Image (tube, rainbow, N blue to C red; front, side, top):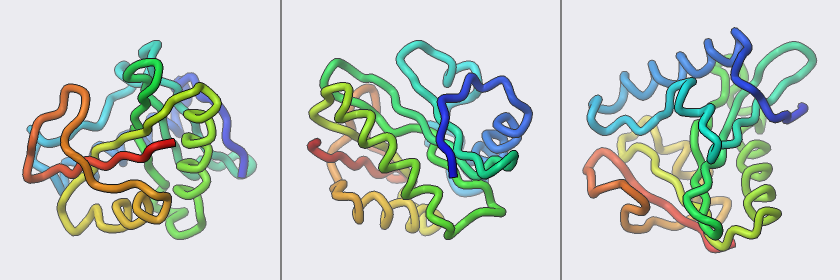
Amino acid sequence: MEIKIDDLSGNAVAILLEEHMDGMKQHSPLESIHALDLDELKKQEITFWSVWEHDELLGCGALKELDKEHGEVKSMRTSSQHLRKGVAKLVLQHIMDEARRRGYKRLSLETGSMEAFEPARTLYISFGFHYCKPFDDYIEDENSVFMTKVL
């Protein structure tokens, strides 16, 4: 598997992000969806990576700079054809390594509170994230959980 910075111009990435947004809409009320669209992911404070095996897209993830010491994990998604192959672990480790390289002292994220998001929460806990209060511009929401990790 190869992780590379992605400019979000490819069709495969657009399809995966559509799958990501469709999954969010299936399991979360619209007002509780915090997934970013293609244009939002192209903002300067966000670095987006895609994971490839040969010419096949396996997954993606992004890191948003909240400030010089705090980053946010965004757009973590594994293609439905490649679940349980270690893609999410690889992406999360890559994001954490990059956050440390940048000198961030904290890495945070928001994910869903519903059963469908249990695998994601389990992954984040296995990497040392713990539950926290809302951060940045987030507000309390019964459909969201917030997690953070000191780096």
